[in-house]
Length: 435
Image (tube, rainbow, N blue to C red; front, side, top):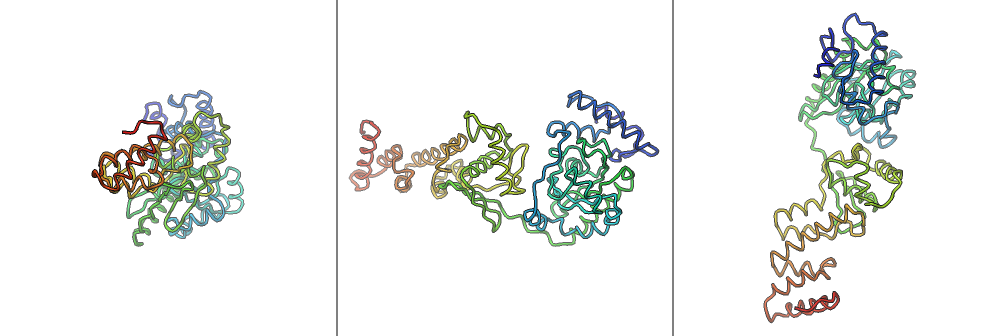
């Protein structure tokens, strides 16, 4: 905890609670709003934050300021059938009745909402009185919206999944100005079998939630959910996500029984993201796709918006990345090359990576793979493997491979005579002296 933030904790015994006993909510709201305005106007993301700002909130403001416009609304990522399919398959669907039993009374009083989000901050369910939900819709606090810190700024569900701890966020502690009339308390939920974060449960409403009972209530609900999940059979491992892109321009993404055939541009994007699991910024992705060609940024955003509509939760942004590990056929090929296993590499090679693509990042990866396979076969000097390569469409004009095959074949054999003729033809085609 930074010194400037430690002093602001004051007499609060539990730093995860928003107000100390006896604090005036209206007065504190004004102090926080002024501190928030000073923080934004100063533009010093790494500087001190004055006023009664708790360290957990100050840290979240700093993270949020790097990613979020304080006047923006959380983006909507999942809608309609896509949302229904996603939350039906989510593990927290199994404990939604429990949350309704424990927290439904609060949500039905007309002033509060019950919300459940996944580990990425997507709201899966938002329930409560119609009037409260209508007010929350104005700030996009709706099912399918993304409320992690990097998309919605400081808020209880977003902070809870970031720091993995139950927390209250009170009024102007919210980073986004449209959210500041609200107060919320949230607690993270974990898979009891694996320990992995599943999401968070949240109650959102007015200033009266800034009391110990709301934080204790969501924490108890989260623990009850974990206890209930522990009584259920351990879920099967999530189906592997596969990507097939060798020898074809329309890559296929597989998730269990689901198959998504991608168009050429979307194939390029997914291949590049698979090559960069750490993610790419908008500028980096644009350079990988278009190189130095002048491009309206709206074009890339439109492509990514269409791709997100197809992939749903698999595609993340800021940076752009695939949210789950992907097993790509070209990555398996690269592993065989790294192990110098010529037989396995040739079996795995089903053609060039997205052969019709001229995206600089794809061209670079394609050349690495093609050269890697050819160089490994040449170094191995196995006539059978070299013949398989030169018979294939991609090796038919590979003069280096033909020369290696010619050198590897026994003198006087018919195969060597055929190889010599092909080398002579390629030498003439390329204007090289026959050797």
